[in-house]
Length: 465
Image: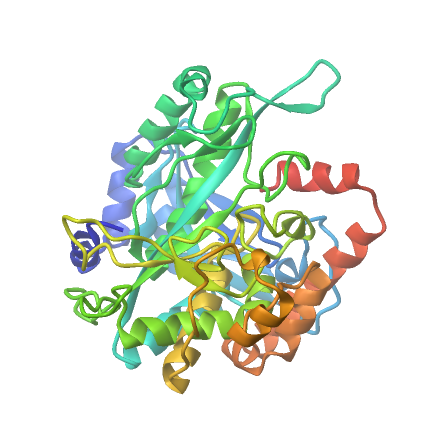
Protein backbone atom coordinates (compact mmCIF):
# COMPACT_ATOMS: atom_id res chain seq x y z
CA UNK A 1 0.00 0.00 0.00
CA UNK A 2 2.63 2.44 -1.11
CA UNK A 3 1.76 6.11 -0.92
CA UNK A 4 -0.40 5.93 2.21
CA UNK A 5 0.99 9.17 3.60
CA UNK A 6 -0.41 10.97 0.59
CA UNK A 7 -3.83 9.41 1.11
CA UNK A 8 -3.81 10.24 4.81
CA UNK A 9 -3.02 13.88 4.15
CA UNK A 10 -5.66 14.12 1.44
CA UNK A 11 -8.28 13.04 3.96
CA UNK A 12 -7.81 16.32 5.84
CA UNK A 13 -8.90 18.39 2.85
CA UNK A 14 -12.13 20.36 3.28
CA UNK A 15 -15.14 18.50 1.88
CA UNK A 16 -17.53 20.36 -0.43
CA UNK A 17 -20.72 21.73 1.07
CA UNK A 18 -24.24 21.45 -0.31
CA UNK A 19 -24.01 24.66 -2.34
CA UNK A 20 -20.72 23.61 -3.95
CA UNK A 21 -22.11 20.18 -4.83
CA UNK A 22 -25.20 21.73 -6.39
CA UNK A 23 -23.03 24.09 -8.42
CA UNK A 24 -20.82 21.23 -9.61
CA UNK A 25 -23.89 19.25 -10.67
CA UNK A 26 -25.25 22.22 -12.61
CA UNK A 27 -21.93 22.83 -14.37
CA UNK A 28 -21.72 19.13 -15.34
CA UNK A 29 -25.21 19.13 -16.86
CA UNK A 30 -26.54 16.64 -14.31
CA UNK A 31 -30.28 16.01 -14.36
CA UNK A 32 -30.65 13.27 -11.73
CA UNK A 33 -28.59 12.57 -8.63
CA UNK A 34 -28.70 9.10 -7.12
CA UNK A 35 -28.65 8.65 -3.35
CA UNK A 36 -27.00 5.22 -2.91
CA UNK A 37 -27.13 2.87 0.07
CA UNK A 38 -26.17 -0.78 0.53
CA UNK A 39 -28.64 -3.00 2.33
CA UNK A 40 -28.20 -5.92 4.71
CA UNK A 41 -28.31 -8.30 1.76
CA UNK A 42 -25.25 -6.58 0.26
CA UNK A 43 -27.25 -5.12 -2.64
CA UNK A 44 -26.66 -1.48 -3.58
CA UNK A 45 -29.97 0.34 -3.94
CA UNK A 46 -31.01 3.97 -4.04
CA UNK A 47 -33.37 6.75 -4.95
CA UNK A 48 -32.70 9.81 -7.09
CA UNK A 49 -33.66 13.45 -7.12
CA UNK A 50 -33.83 15.86 -10.04
CA UNK A 51 -31.32 18.69 -9.96
CA UNK A 52 -34.13 21.16 -9.20
CA UNK A 53 -34.54 19.76 -5.68
CA UNK A 54 -30.95 18.69 -5.01
CA UNK A 55 -30.02 21.53 -2.67
CA UNK A 56 -33.07 20.95 -0.48
CA UNK A 57 -32.67 17.18 -0.42
CA UNK A 58 -29.03 17.34 0.58
CA UNK A 59 -30.35 18.89 3.80
CA UNK A 60 -33.63 17.01 4.16
CA UNK A 61 -32.73 13.70 2.57
CA UNK A 62 -35.16 11.38 0.80
CA UNK A 63 -37.62 9.22 2.71
CA UNK A 64 -37.15 5.45 2.89
CA UNK A 65 -39.33 2.89 4.60
CA UNK A 66 -37.52 1.17 7.45
CA UNK A 67 -38.64 -2.14 5.95
CA UNK A 68 -35.99 -1.91 3.24
CA UNK A 69 -33.30 -2.86 5.75
CA UNK A 70 -35.22 -6.07 6.39
CA UNK A 71 -35.26 -6.93 2.67
CA UNK A 72 -32.93 -9.66 1.46
CA UNK A 73 -31.30 -10.17 -1.95
CA UNK A 74 -34.41 -12.00 -3.20
CA UNK A 75 -36.66 -9.07 -2.19
CA UNK A 76 -38.13 -11.18 0.58
CA UNK A 77 -39.05 -9.24 3.71
CA UNK A 78 -37.56 -10.76 6.86
CA UNK A 79 -39.55 -10.47 10.09
CA UNK A 80 -37.84 -7.71 12.10
CA UNK A 81 -39.58 -5.71 14.83
CA UNK A 82 -40.04 -2.11 13.70
CA UNK A 83 -39.22 -2.84 10.04
CA UNK A 84 -42.68 -3.29 8.60
CA UNK A 85 -45.09 -0.97 6.76
CA UNK A 86 -44.95 1.71 9.47
CA UNK A 87 -41.92 3.96 9.95
CA UNK A 88 -39.53 5.93 7.80
CA UNK A 89 -35.98 7.20 7.91
CA UNK A 90 -34.16 9.67 5.67
CA UNK A 91 -31.42 8.97 3.15
CA UNK A 92 -29.13 11.95 3.73
CA UNK A 93 -26.19 12.18 1.29
CA UNK A 94 -22.61 12.95 2.21
CA UNK A 95 -21.49 15.80 -0.10
CA UNK A 96 -17.88 14.58 0.15
CA UNK A 97 -18.87 11.51 -1.89
CA UNK A 98 -20.41 13.42 -4.83
CA UNK A 99 -19.40 12.01 -8.20
CA UNK A 100 -20.59 12.65 -11.73
CA UNK A 101 -21.16 9.21 -13.25
CA UNK A 102 -19.19 8.79 -16.50
CA UNK A 103 -21.22 5.74 -17.55
CA UNK A 104 -24.69 7.31 -17.11
CA UNK A 105 -25.53 10.45 -19.12
CA UNK A 106 -26.54 13.46 -17.01
CA UNK A 107 -26.33 11.48 -13.74
CA UNK A 108 -24.39 11.85 -10.51
CA UNK A 109 -24.42 9.99 -7.21
CA UNK A 110 -23.61 10.25 -3.52
CA UNK A 111 -23.54 7.67 -0.73
CA UNK A 112 -25.81 8.32 2.21
CA UNK A 113 -26.30 8.02 5.93
CA UNK A 114 -29.61 6.68 7.21
CA UNK A 115 -30.87 9.24 9.72
CA UNK A 116 -33.87 9.60 11.98
CA UNK A 117 -36.16 12.59 11.45
CA UNK A 118 -34.31 14.49 14.20
CA UNK A 119 -31.02 14.09 12.31
CA UNK A 120 -29.55 11.42 14.58
CA UNK A 121 -28.09 8.22 13.07
CA UNK A 122 -30.64 5.43 12.71
CA UNK A 123 -29.58 2.44 14.77
CA UNK A 124 -29.66 0.17 11.71
CA UNK A 125 -27.54 2.41 9.46
CA UNK A 126 -24.52 0.42 8.16
CA UNK A 127 -22.49 3.54 7.35
CA UNK A 128 -23.02 4.88 10.87
CA UNK A 129 -21.84 1.52 12.23
CA UNK A 130 -18.54 1.95 10.39
CA UNK A 131 -18.26 5.52 11.63
CA UNK A 132 -18.62 4.27 15.22
CA UNK A 133 -15.78 1.78 14.74
CA UNK A 134 -13.57 4.46 13.19
CA UNK A 135 -14.24 6.68 16.19
CA UNK A 136 -13.45 3.83 18.60
CA UNK A 137 -10.12 3.24 16.86
CA UNK A 138 -9.32 6.95 17.01
CA UNK A 139 -10.05 6.94 20.73
CA UNK A 140 -7.58 4.06 21.05
CA UNK A 141 -4.96 6.22 19.32
CA UNK A 142 -4.92 5.14 15.68
CA UNK A 143 -6.70 5.49 12.36
CA UNK A 144 -7.18 2.95 9.59
CA UNK A 145 -6.40 3.12 5.88
CA UNK A 146 -8.00 0.43 3.72
CA UNK A 147 -8.97 -0.73 0.27
CA UNK A 148 -11.07 -3.56 -1.16
CA UNK A 149 -8.94 -5.43 -3.71
CA UNK A 150 -11.58 -6.72 -6.10
CA UNK A 151 -11.72 -9.52 -8.65
CA UNK A 152 -14.60 -9.86 -11.11
CA UNK A 153 -15.70 -12.06 -13.98
CA UNK A 154 -16.36 -10.51 -17.38
CA UNK A 155 -19.04 -12.38 -19.34
CA UNK A 156 -21.17 -12.32 -22.45
CA UNK A 157 -24.55 -13.85 -23.13
CA UNK A 158 -24.82 -16.87 -25.37
CA UNK A 159 -27.60 -17.48 -27.88
CA UNK A 160 -29.62 -19.40 -25.28
CA UNK A 161 -29.35 -16.53 -22.77
CA UNK A 162 -26.77 -18.12 -20.50
CA UNK A 163 -23.69 -16.30 -19.25
CA UNK A 164 -20.27 -17.41 -20.52
CA UNK A 165 -16.77 -16.04 -19.75
CA UNK A 166 -15.60 -13.49 -22.29
CA UNK A 167 -12.37 -15.45 -22.85
CA UNK A 168 -10.40 -18.55 -21.91
CA UNK A 169 -7.23 -16.60 -21.13
CA UNK A 170 -4.62 -17.97 -18.75
CA UNK A 171 -3.61 -16.20 -15.54
CA UNK A 172 -1.74 -12.95 -16.36
CA UNK A 173 -1.62 -13.98 -20.04
CA UNK A 174 -1.34 -11.20 -22.61
CA UNK A 175 -4.23 -12.67 -24.59
CA UNK A 176 -6.45 -11.62 -21.69
CA UNK A 177 -5.16 -8.07 -21.97
CA UNK A 178 -5.95 -8.06 -25.69
CA UNK A 179 -9.48 -9.43 -25.53
CA UNK A 180 -10.67 -7.07 -22.78
CA UNK A 181 -8.59 -4.03 -23.78
CA UNK A 182 -11.40 -1.72 -24.92
CA UNK A 183 -13.55 -2.46 -21.89
CA UNK A 184 -10.64 -2.02 -19.48
CA UNK A 185 -9.61 1.23 -21.16
CA UNK A 186 -13.10 2.67 -20.62
CA UNK A 187 -13.25 1.26 -17.09
CA UNK A 188 -9.97 2.91 -16.08
CA UNK A 189 -11.15 6.20 -17.54
CA UNK A 190 -14.48 5.97 -15.68
CA UNK A 191 -12.84 5.09 -12.37
CA UNK A 192 -10.24 7.85 -12.56
CA UNK A 193 -12.88 10.40 -13.57
CA UNK A 194 -14.49 9.67 -10.17
CA UNK A 195 -11.22 10.02 -8.24
CA UNK A 196 -10.74 6.24 -7.87
CA UNK A 197 -7.04 5.92 -8.69
CA UNK A 198 -6.17 2.65 -10.41
CA UNK A 199 -3.23 0.80 -8.87
CA UNK A 200 -2.71 -2.17 -11.21
CA UNK A 201 -4.52 -4.32 -13.78
CA UNK A 202 -4.13 -7.92 -14.97
CA UNK A 203 -6.22 -10.85 -16.22
CA UNK A 204 -6.65 -13.30 -13.34
CA UNK A 205 -6.78 -17.09 -13.06
CA UNK A 206 -10.40 -17.79 -14.04
CA UNK A 207 -11.69 -17.57 -17.58
CA UNK A 208 -12.82 -13.98 -18.15
CA UNK A 209 -11.62 -13.04 -14.66
CA UNK A 210 -10.16 -9.56 -14.13
CA UNK A 211 -8.38 -7.85 -11.26
CA UNK A 212 -8.10 -4.07 -11.27
CA UNK A 213 -7.22 -2.78 -7.78
CA UNK A 214 -7.66 0.86 -6.84
CA UNK A 215 -5.74 2.86 -4.24
CA UNK A 216 -6.42 2.89 -0.52
CA UNK A 217 -8.13 5.63 1.48
CA UNK A 218 -9.23 6.37 5.05
CA UNK A 219 -11.66 3.70 6.20
CA UNK A 220 -14.97 5.49 5.55
CA UNK A 221 -13.86 6.64 2.11
CA UNK A 222 -12.62 3.11 1.37
CA UNK A 223 -16.11 1.69 1.92
CA UNK A 224 -17.68 4.48 -0.14
CA UNK A 225 -15.18 3.80 -2.93
CA UNK A 226 -16.14 0.11 -2.94
CA UNK A 227 -19.75 1.11 -3.60
CA UNK A 228 -18.74 3.28 -6.55
CA UNK A 229 -16.25 0.69 -7.81
CA UNK A 230 -18.89 -2.05 -7.99
CA UNK A 231 -21.34 0.27 -9.71
CA UNK A 232 -18.75 1.43 -12.23
CA UNK A 233 -17.51 -2.05 -13.19
CA UNK A 234 -21.00 -3.36 -13.85
CA UNK A 235 -22.24 -0.29 -15.70
CA UNK A 236 -19.21 0.08 -17.97
CA UNK A 237 -19.46 -3.61 -18.85
CA UNK A 238 -23.16 -3.28 -19.61
CA UNK A 239 -22.45 -0.33 -21.90
CA UNK A 240 -20.09 -2.63 -23.82
CA UNK A 241 -22.78 -5.30 -24.21
CA UNK A 242 -21.05 -7.37 -21.51
CA UNK A 243 -21.88 -8.43 -17.97
CA UNK A 244 -19.47 -8.12 -15.07
CA UNK A 245 -20.15 -10.26 -12.02
CA UNK A 246 -18.39 -9.61 -8.71
CA UNK A 247 -20.17 -12.57 -7.11
CA UNK A 248 -17.89 -14.93 -5.15
CA UNK A 249 -18.51 -17.87 -7.51
CA UNK A 250 -20.39 -16.75 -10.63
CA UNK A 251 -19.02 -19.79 -12.50
CA UNK A 252 -18.87 -22.77 -10.10
CA UNK A 253 -16.00 -24.45 -11.95
CA UNK A 254 -13.84 -21.34 -12.27
CA UNK A 255 -11.72 -19.41 -9.78
CA UNK A 256 -13.73 -17.38 -7.28
CA UNK A 257 -13.87 -13.60 -6.95
CA UNK A 258 -12.56 -12.05 -3.75
CA UNK A 259 -12.63 -8.51 -2.43
CA UNK A 260 -9.60 -8.80 -0.15
CA UNK A 261 -9.42 -6.05 2.46
CA UNK A 262 -5.99 -4.46 2.75
CA UNK A 263 -5.58 -2.37 5.90
CA UNK A 264 -2.92 -0.46 7.79
CA UNK A 265 -2.89 1.49 11.06
CA UNK A 266 -1.75 5.11 11.34
CA UNK A 267 -1.40 7.67 14.08
CA UNK A 268 -4.37 10.00 14.38
CA UNK A 269 -2.53 12.69 12.41
CA UNK A 270 -2.12 10.31 9.49
CA UNK A 271 1.64 10.88 9.45
CA UNK A 272 3.13 7.65 10.81
CA UNK A 273 2.29 4.04 10.07
CA UNK A 274 2.01 2.60 13.59
CA UNK A 275 1.72 -0.91 12.18
CA UNK A 276 5.41 -0.81 11.20
CA UNK A 277 8.40 -1.82 13.28
CA UNK A 278 11.73 -2.10 11.44
CA UNK A 279 13.24 -4.21 14.24
CA UNK A 280 10.62 -6.95 13.99
CA UNK A 281 11.23 -10.04 11.85
CA UNK A 282 8.13 -9.35 9.75
CA UNK A 283 8.22 -5.57 10.12
CA UNK A 284 5.11 -5.45 12.32
CA UNK A 285 4.58 -3.50 15.51
CA UNK A 286 2.95 -4.88 18.65
CA UNK A 287 -0.15 -2.88 17.73
CA UNK A 288 -0.18 -4.58 14.33
CA UNK A 289 0.08 -8.02 15.89
CA UNK A 290 -2.69 -7.28 18.39
CA UNK A 291 -4.98 -6.05 15.60
CA UNK A 292 -4.33 -9.09 13.41
CA UNK A 293 -4.86 -11.40 16.39
CA UNK A 294 -8.25 -9.82 17.04
CA UNK A 295 -9.32 -10.47 13.47
CA UNK A 296 -8.24 -14.11 13.66
CA UNK A 297 -9.95 -14.57 17.02
CA UNK A 298 -13.28 -13.28 15.69
CA UNK A 299 -12.97 -14.60 12.14
CA UNK A 300 -15.47 -17.48 12.45
CA UNK A 301 -18.08 -14.80 13.23
CA UNK A 302 -16.61 -12.01 11.10
CA UNK A 303 -17.08 -14.18 8.01
CA UNK A 304 -20.82 -13.57 8.31
CA UNK A 305 -20.07 -9.92 7.48
CA UNK A 306 -17.16 -10.25 5.03
CA UNK A 307 -18.32 -13.40 3.17
CA UNK A 308 -22.05 -13.07 3.75
CA UNK A 309 -23.78 -14.82 0.85
CA UNK A 310 -24.82 -18.40 0.26
CA UNK A 311 -22.48 -18.36 -2.75
CA UNK A 312 -19.48 -17.20 -0.66
CA UNK A 313 -18.77 -20.63 0.78
CA UNK A 314 -18.14 -22.21 -2.62
CA UNK A 315 -15.03 -20.01 -2.73
CA UNK A 316 -13.65 -20.58 0.78
CA UNK A 317 -12.14 -24.00 0.22
CA UNK A 318 -8.66 -25.43 1.03
CA UNK A 319 -6.09 -25.07 -1.76
CA UNK A 320 -8.22 -22.46 -3.59
CA UNK A 321 -5.93 -19.53 -2.68
CA UNK A 322 -8.90 -17.84 -1.04
CA UNK A 323 -8.06 -18.97 2.53
CA UNK A 324 -9.92 -21.59 4.53
CA UNK A 325 -8.22 -21.51 7.96
CA UNK A 326 -7.73 -18.91 10.70
CA UNK A 327 -4.00 -18.55 10.06
CA UNK A 328 -1.72 -15.65 9.27
CA UNK A 329 1.59 -15.58 7.45
CA UNK A 330 4.08 -13.48 5.49
CA UNK A 331 3.19 -13.50 1.77
CA UNK A 332 1.06 -16.59 2.37
CA UNK A 333 -1.89 -16.45 -0.01
CA UNK A 334 -3.59 -19.40 1.67
CA UNK A 335 -3.60 -17.64 5.05
CA UNK A 336 -6.63 -15.74 6.30
CA UNK A 337 -4.43 -12.71 6.94
CA UNK A 338 -1.46 -12.23 4.66
CA UNK A 339 1.34 -9.81 5.56
CA UNK A 340 2.65 -8.62 2.18
CA UNK A 341 6.32 -7.93 1.58
CA UNK A 342 7.17 -4.25 1.80
CA UNK A 343 8.27 -1.88 -0.93
CA UNK A 344 11.98 -1.15 -0.90
CA UNK A 345 11.27 2.51 -1.64
CA UNK A 346 8.94 2.94 1.36
CA UNK A 347 8.95 0.04 3.86
CA UNK A 348 7.08 2.01 6.51
CA UNK A 349 4.41 3.45 4.23
CA UNK A 350 3.79 0.15 2.46
CA UNK A 351 3.33 -1.96 5.61
CA UNK A 352 -0.15 -3.45 5.64
CA UNK A 353 -2.06 -6.69 6.05
CA UNK A 354 -4.65 -8.34 3.85
CA UNK A 355 -7.79 -10.20 4.91
CA UNK A 356 -8.32 -12.80 2.19
CA UNK A 357 -11.70 -13.98 3.46
CA UNK A 358 -13.77 -11.16 1.99
CA UNK A 359 -15.86 -10.82 -1.15
CA UNK A 360 -18.07 -8.33 -2.97
CA UNK A 361 -21.36 -9.82 -1.82
CA UNK A 362 -20.74 -7.95 1.42
CA UNK A 363 -22.03 -4.60 2.53
CA UNK A 364 -18.65 -2.80 2.60
CA UNK A 365 -19.60 -0.71 5.65
CA UNK A 366 -20.46 -3.82 7.65
CA UNK A 367 -17.45 -5.79 6.39
CA UNK A 368 -14.91 -3.07 7.15
CA UNK A 369 -16.66 -2.01 10.36
CA UNK A 370 -16.63 -5.62 11.56
CA UNK A 371 -12.93 -5.92 10.75
CA UNK A 372 -12.21 -2.78 12.78
CA UNK A 373 -14.29 -3.99 15.73
CA UNK A 374 -12.51 -7.35 15.72
CA UNK A 375 -9.04 -5.83 15.38
CA UNK A 376 -9.73 -3.26 18.08
CA UNK A 377 -10.80 -6.03 20.47
CA UNK A 378 -7.43 -7.66 19.86
CA UNK A 379 -5.71 -4.36 20.68
CA UNK A 380 -7.69 -3.91 23.89
CA UNK A 381 -7.03 -7.47 25.04
CA UNK A 382 -3.41 -7.43 23.77
CA UNK A 383 -3.95 -10.67 21.87
CA UNK A 384 -1.16 -12.26 19.86
CA UNK A 385 -1.73 -14.21 16.63
CA UNK A 386 0.62 -17.09 17.39
CA UNK A 387 3.22 -18.52 15.03
CA UNK A 388 2.87 -17.60 11.36
CA UNK A 389 1.90 -20.24 8.84
CA UNK A 390 4.84 -20.58 6.47
CA UNK A 391 3.08 -23.14 4.26
CA UNK A 392 -0.49 -23.72 3.11
CA UNK A 393 -2.32 -24.34 6.44
CA UNK A 394 -4.15 -27.30 4.85
CA UNK A 395 -0.79 -29.12 4.70
CA UNK A 396 -0.47 -29.14 8.48
CA UNK A 397 -1.93 -32.10 10.32
CA UNK A 398 -4.97 -31.50 12.53
CA UNK A 399 -2.70 -31.80 15.56
CA UNK A 400 -0.28 -29.22 14.17
CA UNK A 401 -3.11 -26.81 13.42
CA UNK A 402 -4.51 -27.29 16.92
CA UNK A 403 -1.11 -26.57 18.44
CA UNK A 404 -0.87 -23.34 16.40
CA UNK A 405 -4.46 -22.31 17.23
CA UNK A 406 -5.52 -22.61 13.57
CA UNK A 407 -9.17 -23.49 12.92
CA UNK A 408 -11.09 -24.41 9.78
CA UNK A 409 -13.61 -21.77 8.69
CA UNK A 410 -17.34 -22.29 8.91
CA UNK A 411 -18.32 -24.13 5.73
CA UNK A 412 -21.76 -22.57 5.29
CA UNK A 413 -23.34 -19.15 5.73
CA UNK A 414 -25.65 -20.59 8.37
CA UNK A 415 -22.69 -21.74 10.49
CA UNK A 416 -21.04 -18.31 10.17
CA UNK A 417 -24.31 -16.66 11.28
CA UNK A 418 -24.42 -18.92 14.33
CA UNK A 419 -20.91 -17.75 15.21
CA UNK A 420 -21.83 -14.10 14.67
CA UNK A 421 -24.90 -14.38 16.86
CA UNK A 422 -22.75 -15.90 19.63
CA UNK A 423 -19.96 -13.29 19.29
CA UNK A 424 -20.69 -10.74 22.02
CA UNK A 425 -18.06 -8.26 20.78
CA UNK A 426 -19.28 -8.04 17.19
CA UNK A 427 -22.95 -8.10 18.17
CA UNK A 428 -22.38 -5.29 20.69
CA UNK A 429 -20.57 -3.29 18.02
CA UNK A 430 -23.45 -3.75 15.57
CA UNK A 431 -26.01 -2.81 18.20
CA UNK A 432 -29.36 -4.54 18.89
CA UNK A 433 -31.38 -3.30 15.91
CA UNK A 434 -28.71 -3.64 13.21
CA UNK A 435 -27.57 -6.99 14.57
CA UNK A 436 -31.13 -8.34 14.76
CA UNK A 437 -32.02 -7.12 11.27
CA UNK A 438 -28.83 -8.42 9.70
CA UNK A 439 -29.23 -11.89 11.17
CA UNK A 440 -32.89 -12.06 10.12
CA UNK A 441 -32.11 -11.03 6.54
CA UNK A 442 -29.26 -13.51 6.20
CA UNK A 443 -31.13 -16.36 7.88
CA UNK A 444 -33.94 -15.89 5.36
CA UNK A 445 -31.44 -15.95 2.49
CA UNK A 446 -29.93 -19.15 3.82
CA UNK A 447 -33.34 -20.80 4.15
CA UNK A 448 -34.42 -19.73 0.66
CA UNK A 449 -31.28 -20.83 -1.18
CA UNK A 450 -31.06 -24.10 0.75
CA UNK A 451 -34.30 -25.21 -0.91
CA UNK A 452 -33.08 -24.53 -4.45
CA UNK A 453 -30.50 -25.92 -6.85
CA UNK A 454 -27.20 -24.44 -7.98
CA UNK A 455 -28.71 -22.89 -11.11
CA UNK A 456 -31.06 -20.83 -8.94
CA UNK A 457 -28.14 -19.82 -6.72
CA UNK A 458 -25.96 -18.67 -9.64
CA UNK A 459 -28.84 -16.86 -11.33
CA UNK A 460 -29.55 -14.75 -8.26
CA UNK A 461 -25.94 -14.00 -7.35
CA UNK A 462 -24.50 -13.34 -10.81
CA UNK A 463 -25.99 -9.94 -11.59
CA UNK A 464 -26.80 -8.65 -8.10
CA UNK A 465 -23.11 -8.54 -7.16
